[in-house]
Length: 371
Image: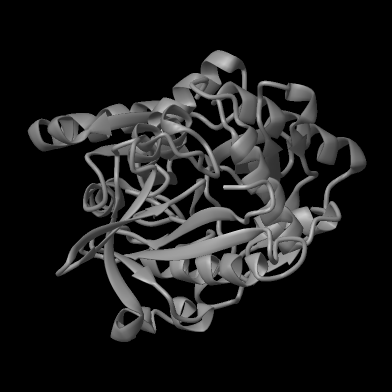
């Protein structure tokens, strides 16, 4: 490549995940942004869709067909491919009856949500291939996906969050009533019950008694082998957007929080991505001092968990006490039309295209081997 050649990107979407459809919508927004200034002409983008059964397909069609999920029926625009872990290839292998053709890459943009996308698995593949990629590395991606591990590290770093405990499938299988008794001794009802490794409110229930707790555990175990139990917090749900690489902490930007006005009893997957009932308020309806307190806690969590590139930092501000409590960090937040992360960054003066350009630049400048 010469200095004037465009940077060769693979943009991944879909995935073997319960959030496959949302990934497609987010990826379509990315593809449109990369075709606009300041990205237009700077990047040569190859879209790669991953089906729900794990097939990798280069897709040469339109963002609209990515967004509505019809890209898989556009067979003339599909080419089977794989991302090679062999660093001499440094890119995709396009597969045909004639053999494999190497398509070199300079970086990867994994617009993948949930399991097999933002949990460190695909990030490990990028690391093996020696390819820079947008977002958090293997460890931070895995840590932020596993709520029990993330909570443990936040405890150690002094990041405030609600009371919690966890149980593994083997405990719940061998002594379910004993585990329920332990949970009830640690937390009062109502109790939020979540799979430890799942995103976007998938598999989450609110238990109000022992019968509800048993049902909630079954729902969570359908998604993961570990379950998290958290105290109910009557609070405002607020979110900060973080961007930057921590080798220079002074350059890490964390926005003031925005607020979610949920359309359901709690902020569900459908509320986030499907029904459009939730509303976004930026900045959140908090005092100036409390806005700054949430932002400072989000920055502490982002650095404590080793995040790079970006994350959305989700918090509760408890009504009555004003306590600021971290809920979780999402290492590849939604980029749909109603998503908080790009809306918060827009308030900071970054259009979607400028944000995409900034995130790719952070990926290319990330200190090698550090994360």
